[in-house]
Length: 181
Image (cartoon, rainbow, N blue to C red; front, side, top):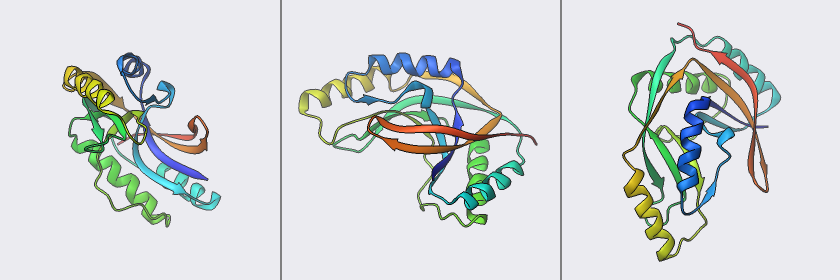
């Protein structure tokens, strides 16, 4: 199964992000109900690895914390591939991501070696945007790039199954893990 561990966005944050998506002039919007902050993309794992990951996440100890979403940006320099809402630096988030990554390592799941760039993906873009589309996107980012978003109380994380389909990925929560110190 294809799986990942993430922080789900609360309803009040989803409402603000959906309103922002409604203003976006370009791109394929992600379903607001599926918006999340990925801590670790596990990719294809076996049922045994999923059970071991479940056990490791169940044993995870960490106090709840608050996260601040802030600003917008894109992946892809000349040709943007995705629009995201950013996250203000938070030592607790970095610590949590490290613990999830460690749990994956202990269960034999090899994660890609890339820097953790916390974000919530809002939209994806086609391979090429023409000059008019790029300008509309640039103006949108200029108007909204510095916007502050509601704070997120992080008191649990979720293990998701991700099934790819024609309309994008379908995310099914497999288990929630409350944070406790």
